[in-house]
Every structure is written in C-alpha cells, then in structure tokens.
Length: 412
Image (cartoon, rainbow, N blue to C red; front, side):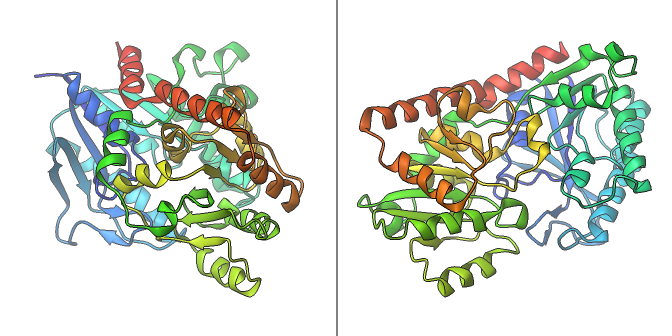
C-alpha cells in the first residue's frame, strides 16, 4: 500500500459542485502517483446552502469516482456570519477527535485557515504525520487589507500569532501566490531575519488547470446559448462571484461608455449579493450591452463558454494584498481557453504582463477601462492571435499534472 495523504480543506466540494479544482486535482494525480489520498472537507458547501449530511451523522466517507472524501458534519451558515467562523472551528475540532476513526495518514496537506487551523497541527502531531500547510489566501492579512477589522483588534493579533506558529511548526509551507515569501519578509518572521520560520521550507505552487479535462469538456459539454454562438459581436466574458470585492460595477460603467459599439457585448456568469442590484442598475441606465447569464455554471461547461469568448475579464477592488500576486482559479481556465485577458489590476508577479496575455492595469476611470476593451477588440489579427497563443502556452506551465509532480518532488 502506498503512503496515505490527507488533503484537509474545509471548503473542498464533490466534483459536481467544485469550481476550485486544486484539492480534487491534487488528489487525482497523487492517487495516480501511488499515494492513497483522502480529501477531508466540511459537509456544508460554502455559498451553495447545501449540507451533505443529516444532523445525526458525525461524518461520512464517500467516493466520487476515484476520489475519496471524508465529510465532517459542519454547521450551515449564511454569508460571513458568526456561524461561518463557528463552523470552521467545530470542523477542525471534530476532525481532531474523529481522526482515529480513519486510516492513519503519513502526510497531511492542510489548506491553512487561521485562527482555527492550528488544531490540525496538533492532529498531525497526534497521528505522527508530516504536516504541510498550503496558503491559498493571506488570512488574516486580508481582513486588515479590506478594512474588515482594525489593526488593533485583539482577535486579529491572536490570528497573526497563530498563523506564525502554524508556519513554524509546518514541515513545508506552500504559497499559491508567488509573493508569499515577500509577505513573510515584511513580517520579519524568517530565520534569515532573526525570526523562527525557516526560509528553506517555503515554496510556491500556484493554482492551475487540467488541460486534458479542459479540452475534453470544451468539445463534449456545450451550451445552447445564442449569445455565445453569435460571432457577429466581440464577446467579453466574466465568470465568477458578483460581490462587492469583485467590483463588477466598474466593468459595467466601462460597458456603458461603449454601448454605442454594437459589436461588443459583456457576458457575466456568476452570482452574489450584488447581482440583482447590478441588473437593476443596467435596466435603469439602459445599458443593453451587458447581459447577465446563468447564476451558476456547472464547471464542465466553463471550457465551452471560454472557448466562445473573445476576451476574458479579471475584475477586483484595488488593494495592497494583490502586491503578493494572485492565484485565482479562473485565471488558469482563462489561460487554457487561449484568449486574451484584461484585468483591472496589475498584481504583483503579473502573468498577463510577463507573458503578453492582454492588459493588466489599474484604470483611472471608466473611460480608461472602456478604451482598453475597445483596444483589444480592435487589434490586428496577428497581434490578437499572438496573445491567444501566449495564453495557451502559459497554461501548460500550470497543468495540474505538472503542479502535482512539483509537489511530490517537495515531499521527497
């Protein structure tokens, strides 16, 4: 029997619901490499209001094809309520106490979740497993960056203490954003600065895309959508959450300035608390070139949607947190589609700029944003095709087969 791996990720979902593919793709390719992998996740599916377990069940082991999950019964919640944090705490506590019911792991890869994730460090100690932490979001730093808490908040200070302690205890620290080590340097936590976190155990493995699956789904799972199939206009596609942090109003304001250009339309796929308000805004302002599409798209249809796009959009609120780089799952699907990308931010370690994939900048105005959309729409064929080729070739560097092999090389 191969080594046993636990991928502990509160937010991981069964494949039919999952759009953030990292956990299930790591599990798939770790299995292919001879490891026995279990994804341990919450029974409650974040942002979907679905709980997979009834209250009387403590946990459930279930297989989805060749993927083995352990769902820990977790409390349902709505939005960022107190119950979300309570659910996170109880999940990690339950995993610790139920852990001896499951096959003992040799390795635990834990998607870091301060302040409660420290409990899984003790779980690894108890089971004598090597503990790797992966950092997909800079919590708790993002709470401060987005003005959700004061820098003097005692809970924030406690969270920083726990975050640092988790990094000290981890055998490896894996950041999905390239500037993770710069974040630690600014905190002065590294041994090279007199701190306690060993520089040599810090690594970078970004999110990615499964090229083989992407290409298969693009051909075999198509939507009957007249807008997507209409090649008479230039299709600008946004896929993702429609929340305050995504700042979609800026994209819509830009669209309002190019509505006279009948050949450009913006298609928005996604849901969130801002969606209905933005639909009303478009109706009130008579912005007819913005079309709100499905609230949720089964991930297998995303490759087809992107293959019919002419330009893909990354859109966020500006914030210093982006200086450390980005690791948005949809970015890598955008790359695989082989289409240019326009971002309203130039993040640190920006792939768009580095590989000439489109335009990435913080726009000074809606007019500036609109002009950038029109600029790409009006590129000559060779320049446009070069961007498309650059996107697709860049995606090959982030194929999940390669990323999983990179991870395996670290643990060996």
